Length: 122
Ligand SMILES: [Zn+2]
Image (tube, rainbow, N blue to C red):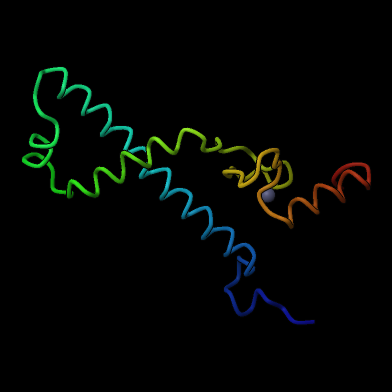
């Protein structure tokens, strides 16, 4: 039988690596949304002092106005992003890609299912 672990390092299977990459991308997206929310908050404070936001932004920030606008759009879209939950099979925290997901991966989903069938984890 082929041992896939041998080709991908000692600790992770290809499926686990793919999962890691997916979670990494989700983390990056939520970090960007967080930056966007901070920009919205900053804009509220600046405009509360009757200062024009974009001119103020341009003279105080090193990122482009276009980049900032894109981050702020992301923050608006991120309102529907699911909260991270704990996998019922391995206990790892993850952000579910589907609603009602209880496990971080197919492997864990199957493990949880087999565990239930066998009357609990052995
Ligand atoms: Zn898991």
